[in-house]
Amino acid sequence: MKKELTQIQKRILDFLIEQKVSKGIPPTLAEIALHFGYKNRATVQQHLQAIEKKGFIKKNPKLSRAIEITVEDKFFIPRPVLGEVAAGNPLTIYPDAIDTVELPTIARMPKDSFLLRVKGDSLKDAYIFSGDIVIVNPNLEPKNGQIVVAILDDAAVVKRFYKKKNEIELVSENPDYKPIVIDKKYPSFRIVGIVVGVYRSMSKKAV
Amino acid sequence: MKKELTQIQKRILDFLIEQKVSKGIPPTLAEIALHFGYKNRATVQQHLQAIEKKGFIKKNPKLSRAIEITVEDKFFIPRPVLGEVAAGNPLTIYPDAIDTVELPTIARMPKDSFLLRVKGDSLKDAYIFSGDIVIVNPNLEPKNGQIVVAILDDAAVVKRFYKKKNEIELVSENPDYKPIVIDKKYPSFRIVGIVVGVYRSMSKKAV
DNA sequence: TAAACTACCATACATTTGTATGGTAAACTT
DNA sequence: AAGTTTACCATACAAATGTATGGTAGTTTA
Image (cartoon, rainbow over all chains, first blue to last red; front, side, top):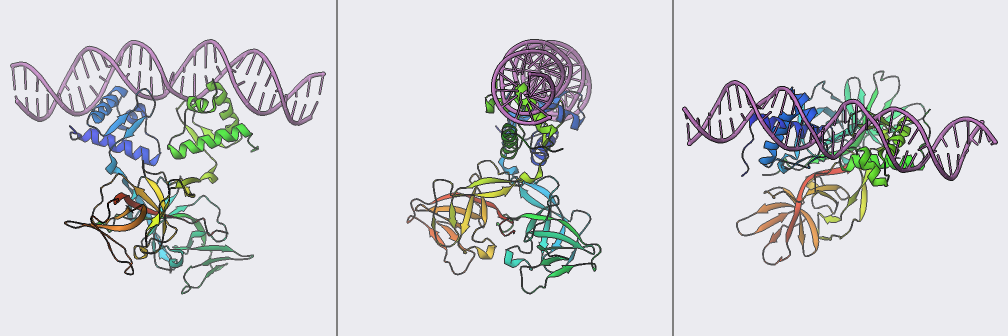
């Protein structure tokens, strides 16, 4: 009953999923046609009918953008991890994605937010561990006590943020590490963003 | 320049945000009109124009559902937590939501998945702690080694799942707790779902 | 009291969107 | 050789959608 998809049908399904995950909203026929260079919505329409016939999607007729994806094993999609960030001592941050995590569909990122993998154990008392993925939002103002990602001389750290009268203190949750005090010694200091959440995938240890 | 919203405008904006977060896609004018009981899309249209004038949204003209929400501080929305679940000894699971977590917009749940707050420390070697939110997907088949939520006589536990020849073993990650062996002694045993991820909000400790 | 704002309604219209129908060409069955 | 599937195109049409314009009534502001 559930036949295999053709190459093109598969690429269209991938596009549907990618759009739904990245933009949160399925595309219209016209948008799909534009993306694949079709001059005609009818072409897309026929592909979608074929995909629906094979049971991978379900369409709510007449409504716009009402494409429901019924393949449940596509819950996990690859997301770029932009670098590693030190919870202990500063670590290099890489310009390109160093890895991808399989983030469940739950993880629709706030716009402009990105992921960093944590290395080191200086935040272990905040229950953030080496290997965890932190979700970083660069568009929020840091408040005292929040966990932030900061750059010190081309290295990045994850620490708790405290603004004092004349300086900024970045403290670890682990007493083994001393607070970093920010003053004029760090000309390249910059707050990259605020950690809005921690995500840890459970699929790793599965046998 | 950026005036205050009126009561009605604020309710419409809230509806826009709620729809975008829960359904992932902004509503159409007709859908908004229906929700508020307006007989006319033009009424909605004028409200949206007013809201846009005050800078809270941005519209991509002519396109459907092209309402962009420009207020970024609404990233966190309440999500129901369906109950508590024991990582150590079994805990009662409640029929109704016991609490809400402020889950960032990142957390658009896979359909039918739900949240449970973990109590107890039996999974601490898997780095799941008391207070963490686990994302549970009830529609996946458990595989050996995965962490599952199971019900034993009206109490729920979070354990690692192992299927043996004639029985099912639920083991803790903490050596202090002994594995639970499932056989005929547990007539009401049921796998509730699979833990697909752990989420921990960082906003709690902020000052 | 006049002007401005808010909150609605009705009607009209151009696009967008989904859908239906028919056609062409290539590849692959049978 | 005839049929089927796949991958496109064109045209046509109804419904959905966003938008423009004008109107009424109540409230607030100047």
